[in-house]
Amino acid sequence: MRDFSQTKKLFHLPEGMVYLDGNSLGAMPISASRRVQHMMEHEWATQLIKGWNTANWYTQPNTVGDRLASLIGAAQGTIVMGDTLSIKVHQALAAALAINSDRHVILSDTGNFPTDLYIATGVMTMMGDRHSLKTPAPEAIEDHIDESVAALLLTQVDYRTGRMHNMERITRKAHEHGVITVWDLAHSAGAISVDLASANADFAVGCTYKYLNGGPGSPAFIYTAPKFTDTAPVALSGWMGHEKPFEFDLDFKPACGISRMRIGTPPVIALAALEASLDVWDMVNMEDVRAQSIQLTETFIREVEARCPELVLVSPRDSAMRGSQVSFAAENGYAIMQALIAHNVIGDFRKPNIIRFGFTPLYIDEGDVIKAASILQKIIDERLWDTPEFKAVKAVT
Ligand SMILES: *Cc1c(COP(=O)(O)O)cnc(C)c1O
Image (cartoon, rainbow, N blue to C red; front, side, top):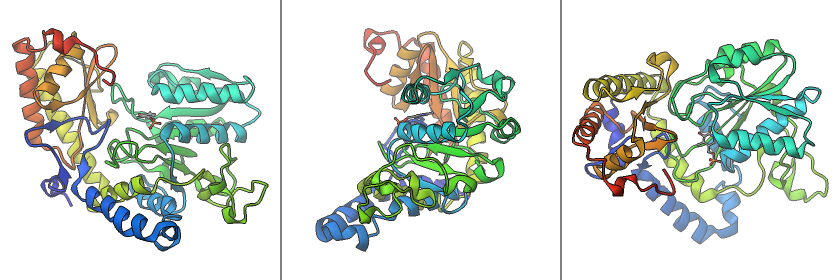
């Protein structure tokens, strides 16, 4: 479906709000509450423990993973859901380091999200401080790929600027040097066209509460390339990743296939909400979403630059290099964003001075984009941000 006015009707959006923060927490599909209520009343309440079989809770992390696969160019049986993205980064990175155990460099970049780097540090500690973490600037990453690197850990789309790495080219270079790649798709899945299979990615991870609209804290996913699904080393060896969990064997034997990346009991209620969201994704084609996203971001950049010349674009101007977000550097950015939010235009702020806006074609249209730009102009022209209330920093920005 190309007519996104139809998908927009499938989301709950508060009257009058322009929601440009779907890159942090996607909007709620209206059907999610029905789906969750159904799960609670017709599965949990009535079937109780039987639900693991009768309502297919046990296989759900795999079946939902298979549904997600088509959105990011992955083969069936290569994705499984569960846990948080931070945990999935740990699993994938530890597996990559175990595959390349004779090398001792983890290569990432300064554009990566802190949790990915923190997890890398924790993995290094657990492995006896034999590794080092290199973080060049994103633009310089390819110059640092060489035979010393065990694993390349990159977030494809930079959470602050929206700058996008070329996954295919970087993965090719990594493989020429024997490097295992771990791609974080937090700002890619549901935002841009991703083709894991043709890019030849080794591991990929991502969350589902941003562009995929799975709801706050919805489960993350992990992908392993088909060549690794039966053999990937298992760092977090929980019982649900065992080949036969209900044998209650005292020795861990990893499952064949992607199930070895399961850890413990899956979040069944959260998976129900995510399934409702995937029903909406089933109605669209990612190429159309990407084309519409480019149109929305181009409009926003054009409108904001014409109306607010003091704001400096920090996202790439070339849409081919940009994810589905637009960021501007702004003096008093924090207060400007607070004032915008008070005027019902929701974006967010990232230190030191970045105001960030996410564009989600499933429920944001051109009218929203122009309205947001005109309210931003009013706030800046009339200095509406310049009050103590808007300068007081909240816990979550
Ligand atoms: C949003 C985001 C995370 C968040 O990780 P959680 O474990 O879900 O809190 C991690 N990495 C990147 C790159 C992100 O953008």
